[in-house]
Structure formats: C-alpha cells, structure tokens
Image (cartoon, rainbow, N blue to C red; front, side, top):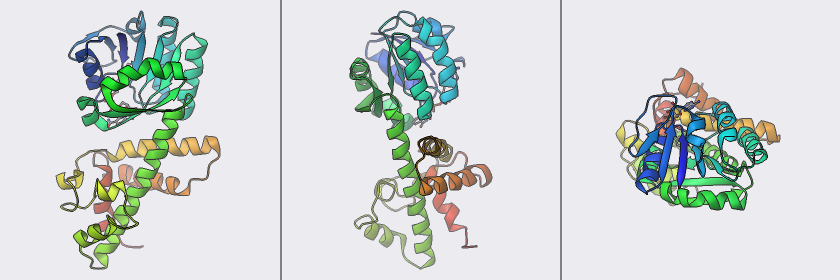
Length: 290
Ligand code: NAD
C-alpha cells in the first residue's frame, strides 16, 4: 500500500519504519530534519499525501493536527483514508473527521497505548473511532504497527476511550502512591503491603504490574530511578484532555480534576518533568499532612 506518514518523532518514526519493513511504500514528512529506515522523505505534508491510499498522522496536539489536516485533505485522493494516531482532544478529532468526510475521504482517530517501546516493537494497542469502512481500511496497518486494535465507535470514540482509560490510570497511580506513603508512616513493610493489596480488593494495574515502590513487585520504572516509562508530563497532557472533554460534555469528574491538579503541581513546581508518572511515590514520601 502507498502510505503517507506525517510526524516522524519518537512514536511516528518507529511506526513508519515498521510499515516500510512490512513491504509498504512509505512517504514521510516531518517539520524536523529526520531520516527513517525505508521511508522516502519529502518536503511537505501535501506531497506525502498525493496518491497515498492511507495517510497517517502522529503529531503533538490537536491544534497542530488541525493545521496539518488543512494541508493534507485537499491533496488526498477521493476515497483515501486519513488515520490520526496522535493523542488529541475529542473536539479536534471530530472536527478533522467532519472535514475529511466532507472532502470525500475516510477518517479514523486511532490513538495508541504502549509507548515508544510498543512503537518500536510493533506491539501498540490502537483505540479507533470512525466508520466500519474506514476502520477496515486501516486495520491491516494497525496489525503491522500493533498487536491489538479495538473499534470503539464513531469518530472521536478512540480519543474518548484513551482519555477515559488514562484518567483512571492517573487517579489510580496517585491512590496507590499515597497509600504506600501512608503505609510507610504506619510502619508497614512495603513488601507486605504489596503482598496484601495485589491479592486483595485494592489491586490494580498500577499496583500489580507497574508497582511504584522500588524493589517490590515486577520490574518497573521505580527500579530504574523513576526514568520513564510513561513520563509525568505525558500523563498531565492526557489528564488535561480528559478534563477538557469533561467540560465540553458537562461531566462531573472530581477525581480526574484533582489528579490533573496534582500532576500539574508535580511537573511544573516539583521537578517531576522527565520523571516517570509513578515518581508520585517519592513525592508523597517527602510530604506531611499540612
Ligand atoms: P514527538 O514530539 O517525538 O513527535 C512529534 C513529531 O511531530 C516531531 O517529530 C515533530 O517535528 C513533528 N511535527 C510537529 N509539528 C509538525 C507539523 N506541523 N508538520 C509535520 N511534523 C510536525 O512526540 P511523540 O512522543 O512521537 O508523540 C506523538 C503523539 O503520540 C502525541 O500526540 C503523544 O501524546 C502520543 N503518544 C505518545 C506516547 C509516548 O510514549 N511518547 C505514547 C502514547 C501516545
């Protein structure tokens, strides 16, 4: 398949390389000067879009996606599919979907989980929104770049699923970290805390699979000085998107709101930038109730 790929950064670069490795003809564009194995770089997004059956975008945010889509959509062939894998706000995903469909194209919003390791290893999970026809067109490419693709519903449903999942993740990580810090102050051994909680009703992915306490549970960023992993500032980005969506949909999300405020404080004022999001535990360790 002839594929245009726009945004070849930490995630997009290895995703495009995997498509090329699988035998697809990949033409790429990035604002930065990048070189990706097997990908023919061109001078603009529009140039990468001409004649492509599918154009994939992997960009920093919704504003940039909207600007790039303005260039891509008029250049794309009738019936081609625009597949946005970036994590963006639901409103931008829906606006670009409308614009693409009006331009005679198919559209899928397909944010991912799995991080840079998943992008390099071709083991991402895609959460997709769009028509059945659009999803069917993109699915063989999801199979190359990932291990699982869930068709969540109409346009915007992929972004909705992603931010709801990550809102749970942020809230749960904070709850797990504050419980460990409380357990410390109560004189409870961390290993015992893990042994009980990981097999009791407080269990969660953050406790069982990504334990924020070093030396406890399976290997996690806590065992590597809290190097990411999933960086605190990326968690903050997703929490902000969840609260933007909650505002837009008039949903009451007090825990998500508090998680956003705590991660903002951690990233902006407490040197959390560049740390894994589980570094909330050493943050709580240092604090008192007042
Ligand atoms: P990145 O900053 O490494 O890559 C973004 C790329 O887009 C850069 O190479 C940049 O030069 C390019 N770009 C920016 N504006 C452009 C424009 N107008 N035209 C063409 N190229 C442009 O970011 P990333 O880590 O690859 O993340 C990309 C997306 O994936 C984000 O939406 C992010 O939230 C999401 N995501 C990232 C991770 C992760 O672990 N890094 C995990 C899941 C989802």
